[in-house]
Length: 347
Length: 221
Image 1 (cartoon, chains in turn blue, purple):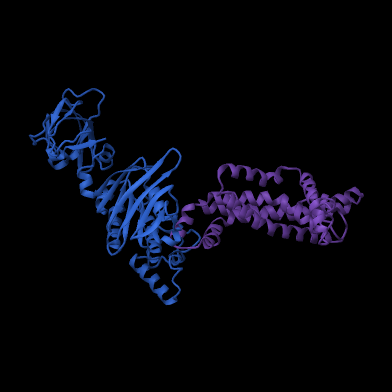
Image 2: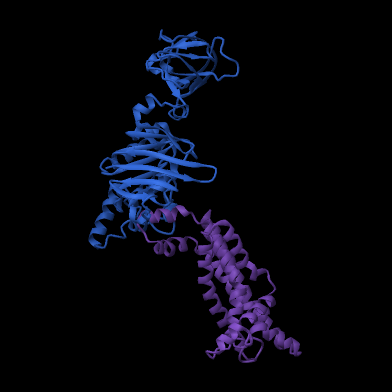
């Protein structure tokens, strides 16, 4: 199982240049809205044609500009779950799902596949409803059923939870993962939520302004996002300009301090980052004298805004997230960062 | 009262309406996919008959079909003479009412969520299936409203019709040309009766359009 994407397309003012490779499992495309994630999916499914490049799924070339190969979406057999689910509003749930089975000529097999899907996606009793009469979660299940009965070779899910109320999302993520666990082909999930990407995807590709910035196993990309945009998209709140001093030392001008990251510092360093959770008052390494300038309460955490002593005016505050159970009585005047938590960002 | 003009008007309008239904929808569907410049140009050409005086449309039709014009002469070789026949009025009605179908269908298609068509394609559905089973049903109300308007406009056609089909009682007479002819010949009482017939038909048609539009609104909400 493998999917290779290497495409370019000019949208006039926006240039998409999407490159990544997967080998089975779930791949997340993480990026802000308008970064080219959905366009990439559309090109894989064949409902949009890139200007040039190559798309190969399980050894079958779906698109190759040099060899003039461009299979129709119908020939590609790639399942696509639209952000809006795209259920046919003029058809019942039953008719919607049966459109995915139109190529199955054997009536008995068709019926069996239909009933299996209804059962698998817990749609019993909804067969005669119209899409307008379904909740977001039900609509998603109908769209999944319709897609799965068409026996796609790969699945593309475009922001599958954006139309779902936030308090239902976690459960639906668990349900979807359980459902897709048996799916043999590649899956690509587009999301702007780092949590969703982290929960669901074995590997991720971080996209910004039409380009793939980082690509690899999810944990590795989160541990070392490599670029400022990658850091932001994976949720790093504290990002400051930095420059290399030597292989083990960087200088942060806004704070006026040297830091010692665990990773070797390469040439071309432009910035450093510390995730909001990784400041520690008890950590003695990479110390930073600070004072508190504001607090924001969340249900289970405090977000505490700090500034380093002597920090350059106009530079952003530090964000420190701390669990309510361990929030100190008096605000510390010193925070440290473990060397392995100092992220290094390059050009 | 001779009912021939009613019968003639209805058959002309019905035939024109069927022809315009298909040509208007397909023009709307394909024009929407063209590059912007060509689209703008074609859009002007296809909408012109709506804003031109119908007599100008009649003039162009006579340029095309007139017995002394090249195409008219060409048709005459096969024994076909278009002007002054009842069915020449079909051309007049169709050309004049075409923009109504074309524009309403285009409006309906533009409001159509293309994700639905794309979803259908990824499910392996043929483009024909998607067009007739998804796109048309979803755009149904708008297209029906367009059809009714087209029929109404075709039924009331006067200018182009009078130029190409003229007025021959029992042959090319339609309701609108009859009203004019009766008025001209001082038969006011009979003209009034035809006016009533016309009013009744138009009222029914407009009621139908309003009902369809109401339904459409209710559905999109």
